[in-house]
Image (cartoon, rainbow, N blue to C red):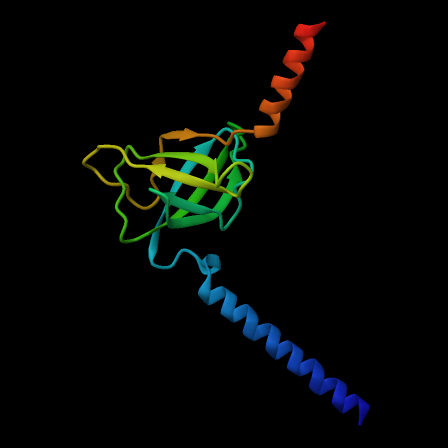
Length: 150
C-alpha cells in the first residue's frame, strides 16, 4: 500500500512539473525563434547578455537573444537575436548593450538607421557598442583619486 501511494504521489509531482514547464515554455520567450527572423551582432564585450536577454527598440521588446558564441579567430562575442517578423529594420541599424536603470538587467538596444534596404535573416549588424563595466569605471575613478593624493 505504501509503494502504491508513493508511486501516485511521484506521478502527480511529475505531472505538475511537466505542466509548469509547458506553461513557462509557451507563455515566455524561452521557445524563441518562431514567428521572427534571426540577425547577428558582434561585440568586443557581451558581459551580462545571455540566451533570453531582451532585444528592444524605442524601449519596447521586439525580440530576444537566441544564441551566443565566441569567434575563435577574433575573440569577439557573436550574438544571435530573434526579431519579431512584423518589425523591419534598416540595414544600418546599430546595437548597444545597456542596462535597465543603474543596476538593472542588461538588454540589447537597437537603433534604426536611415537606409532604405532592410535587414534580412542572417544579416550581421555592422555598428555595435559593447557592454560597459560600471564597477571597473568606479574603481578607476577611486584609484585615480588615490594616486593624485600620493
